[in-house]
Image (cartoon, rainbow, N blue to C red; front, side):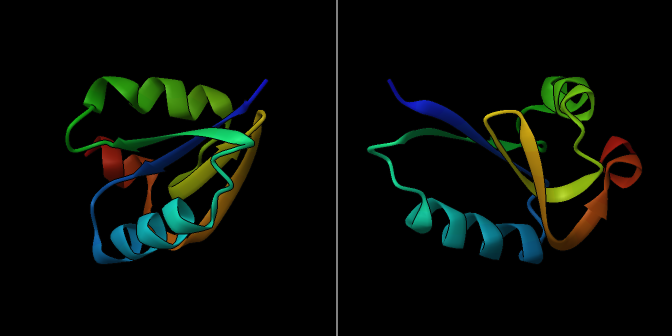
Length: 79
């Protein structure tokens, strides 16, 4: 059974660069990767915060949050 990987981002240049790197690096035989762009899915902001996402870009693997570089805080994402 595959584990879930969710990559959250806000569409900024840092986020897009990280998205490309993560998408090509994740082993899709082990993980189902979902990419969530908050510009297109604002309804997912609460979900990300409940998981522990403090800034984007961030990758959530099996419930663990990994913040990658720094594009924007979740307060900035919320606007």
